[in-house]
Amino acid sequence: MKKAKVLFILLLPVLLSYPVLASAADENAKKEIWRGASLPAKWGFIDKTGKLIIEPQFNSSAKFSEGIAGLNISGAIPPYAGGYIDKSNKIVIKPQFQFQSPFREGLAAVSVKFRWGYIDKTGAFVIPAQFSSARNFNEGLAWAAPDDGKYDTGEGCIDKSGKFVIEPKFKSVYRIFSDGLSPVYVVHKEGDPPRTGHKHGYIDKTGKMVIEPAFSQAYPFYEGRALVKVGPFDDTNAGLYGFIDRAGKMVIEARFQNALNFSQGLAAVKNAGKWGFIDGSGKMVIPPGYDSTESFAEGLAPVSVAGKWGYIDMTGQMIVQPRYEQAAPFSEGLAKITLGGQKGFIDNTGRMVIEPRYDLAGAFSEGLCTVGFLSPEFKRKYKYRPYP
Image (cartoon, rainbow, N blue to C red; front, top):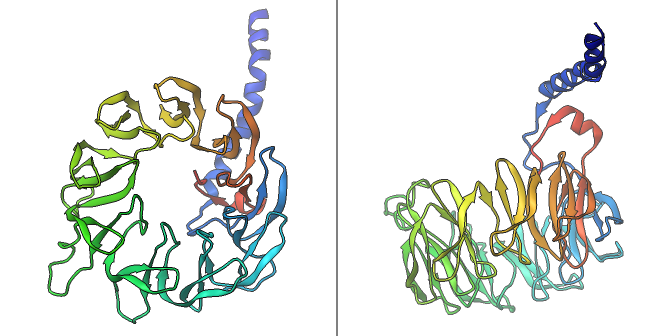
């Protein structure tokens, strides 16, 4: 009898908690699934101690670039609510845009009345809003599409005067130059069978095709190598990944089910359902053993093992043991992790620097990080998949 009494006392907390757990599960089952394109959060900015430097008030997330950030400013009336703030939360470019992008090379692509142009840091248009689409400048050029009223028009590259220096006859998935080259495919021609012409190659900054279209997928160059896929264009499950050099030579044969770009001398590759890492010669230097991974940044890479995320170093040693629901690459000394559905930040030893208390978060840029908060009413009503 005494043993039974002791056992009952030990089990009492569990028995008492069971109805609460069951009730929570029932409530969760009753929630609607959020199907919006984005989560309706209020966004602000924290510093590297977790202190809120700019209170949550924005309807969009962004990061600081060249000292300012483009956001939907509170109090402005959509669709022209986009402006720019500085790190003191002072509005430096008044809300007047439908969409706005980060500043790159002194200019930012913005949209007014569904037409894109480029502004400087005073908010003045240096390239008038005249394009149907536009991307940021990098390596002195920006991808843009003319507003010619045609469906599925081609894209080309403009210089900082707004002049097309590469004829708009290409499509580019990534719309970026790196190492002087950009992956493209030629716009589908009338009369061709659908998608058969969508082989990817690479152009230089004159628009010359320097690596002939031979790949079903092609990615930008990183560290002298570009990830490419060889195989059928239409079947995403077919084909294999390898790496080419700037001459278009396959320097690491296409033998991987999946792969990521090179970063810090290593590239993540997948075979037989597991991820490992190769070096620039194609040698497997970290054996496949991870369910998922991201690229190396600041000497560490997030990896997933048995549903939990941790971090390895460049020898494959597990530096931060897998315990997180999600994990992102390091940026400015900190990495975003998810624990209990909330976002926090760790340092490269695994020490929790900023406790998980944010519903959503970005990555640190120029010393600040955007964080998002969902209303209690939203979380009570909806199921949602937290951002990574």
